[in-house]
Amino acid sequence: MSLSQSKSWLSPFFFWMIFACAAGYYFYTHEKSVKYGIDLVGGTYITLQVQLDKALEHELIARSKGLISRLKKAHLGEPINKKFGQKEVELTFATEKDVEAAYDILSGRGASLQATEKGTKLILRLPQGDIDRLKVEAVQSDIRVLENRVNAFGVGEVPIVAQGHNRIVIELPDVQDPQRAKKMIGRTAELEIKLVEDVAHSHEALLDKYDQQVPEGFAIVPGNRYEEYYLLPTIADLSGRMLRSARLGIDDREGATVKFEFNSEGSRIFHDLTAQNIGQRIAIVLDGVVISAPNVQGAISGSGRISGGFTVESASELATLLRSGAFAAPVTFEEERRIGPGLGKESIHNGLKACLVGLGLLFAFSVLYYKLAGLFAFFALLYNLLLVFIGLSMLGATLTLPGIAGLVLTVGMAIDASILIFEKIKEDLAEGMTPRQAVRQGFKDARTVILDANITTFIVGIVLYKFGTGPLQGFAATLMVGIIATLITGLFFLKSLFTLMFDVFGFKKLWI
Image 1 (cartoon, rainbow, N blue to C red):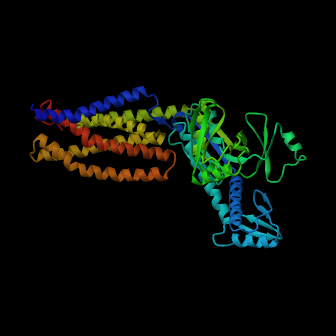
Image 2 (cartoon, rainbow, N blue to C red):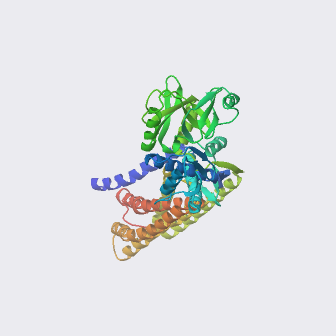
Image 3 (cartoon, one colour):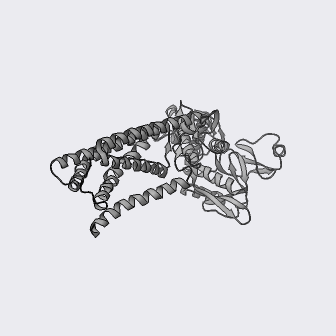
């Protein structure tokens, strides 16, 4: 054996063997390197009801505040009283002339609210077309937020789909802490920054200051650390929807905190709010509870922190919630169903049995029909399965029952590629080529056919993954990973086995 021959087999074959050993070590040291779907390991089905009225109310208020801001910039009459309701906003002006001026601005180009004049009042409502669109967008926005939150548990490909017009269904497979998952899923995570109007040590004491009547446009909000209750505006000056980032922070004095930063618009509002209210208290409100209410010492550019006796885990969880975003519409738990792993174990057992039976039949067919080359094809098939599991693990994909079906299909496609190569080698041998020449030419000629067949199937897999949901995505993911593994093993690993046979063991004849 010459030096050049030695290099020809050492490079590819040893590479594949080292790769296989590394992959085997990875799977041995990582117990859950491949995740399993709810149909295999059991889990929880959760149905959420989306409070669409809240989303519409928020949008109505936001648009109304935009109108008031436009009136202020235009130096026109501003409303002397504002009454924000769930379905309409009532603005009271000093004169009917101010109402007409506001109406002209509102009904101009790009108007986003329906306005009705009523004496010195202007009644604002959302257009019906916008209401229908906002309801759909609120559900889709909540689904995106839920996907971000569920990813924090390392659970890939969790089906989160809309059901009807105001429900969302979530499948949580094999979550170790379902109660914590429910807590994160159902939490609104609405961060608000508001000026503190007044504060007292009890709800009743605060009411006594205002003759048992909460002023119009204000609400009493409890604090979470001390026995304090705050009188805050109903409408927030700044909200978490303008957040750019949120992360865990460690402070020497206060321990674990959550550091947050606003986007450009939020930074501008935050700067103006703090610059104009130095010496006043501002409240950081999270889900209707005042987390902290510090005094403003000076203008703040656009970042801050939340402290409140957090542990590292709870601060990290809050940062995750804030990063994932607040719900466009709050959700409530409507139904929860636990699915046991019994059916999944039976499915895994039957799927494994199908794979073993298929492998056994393929082994018998390959060896009987293609002899030594058939044995090589079987080795390539085993390597193919190893690559599939490595691919699924690296992608964080979830193996479902349809995914097992895709795995079985991959086995058939892998052996099909080997058959195409072997038939071409047999033709070349019949034409008088030497075994080495026939192998080289067989791989070269079959490459185009194998690539064409697998690329077209891969495109179908992309379409299934893009437009499918849940189990269909699991099938598509397994199929696409299997196709890539088939191309690698069929065109490279299998060829290295033939090279090993000729260059190392010195075979002059090919049994095929």
